[in-house]
Image (cartoon, rainbow, N blue to C red; front, side, top):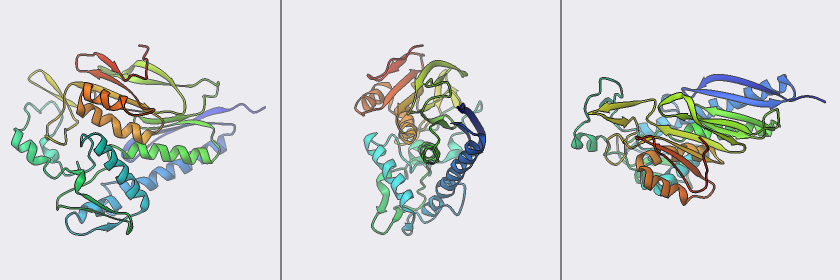
Amino acid sequence: MKISKSYRRILKLMGNRFEFTVIADEEAAAQKAIDLAIEEVSRIEVLFSTFKETSQTSLINQYAGIKPVKVDEEVIGLIQRAVKISDITQGAFDITYGSIDKSLWNFDVNMTSLPDLETALQSVSLINYKNIVIDSAHSTVMLKHRGMRIGFGGIGKGYAADRAKQVLQKLGIKAGIVNAAGDLTTWGMQSDDKPWTIGIADPNQSELPFSLLNISNMAIATSGNYEKFATIEGRKYSHTIDPKTGLPVSGIKSATIICPSAELADVLATPVVVMGVNVGLNLINQLQHVACIIVDDDDRLYTSRNINVKQ
């Protein structure tokens, strides 16, 4: 009887660290499957990257306020799902954040003050998901105003992880993990028939997990200020910007979402940080098959109703 083994590959895709782990009987089959999963992620990057001038996303941005751009159904689908999350989160998540003036936000030790309210508001004046015009019949997308830009930074990695998982499953890989820079999805069991153990980073020392979860057939994503932040007058500000005010958010160190889809986990993590503990938990408690773990700036732990965390 053949013994299944774990095969792993790490590389940079979509500007991020991707890690593919598969359980398979033969190394050749495992490596071939990982090759095809990588091809799928690369294909998605070509469609959705804002760093590639020829991508469909870049063309949408280029012709903002000018004309609709014909795009693949896949692009329309992802934009529609992103807009749906914007509706659910009342704009706390918004893919039109691409127009924000990055020069206001250099989250490093040199940042000693926040911009004034008017400058901040001006910087987000073009952010409004309601100004994305989708024509499904003609497969076109148009941004209403010149200077508007969309970006898939808050949803793209999760989507890519889900798609890579689908490719691997179709190739007969019964178990594995696709980890897209911390947005990860799992299926099946490890080679010793145990569920996958996922560590949730401790916001104060991101190398160490503060909690371990045994999961299978679930995805997980974390958003927070533990890697990029600025401390101004003793208060810690996240690199996450509130699309409504243009100011960085504070109050939450990290928000971790657990649900069946990496795309959904990815897309919900950031708005929970923006919305704050109470509003964020209230939202997650209304969603089926979605759980949430929040650590606030004072290291207090909050969880949604449907999860128990062992620390």
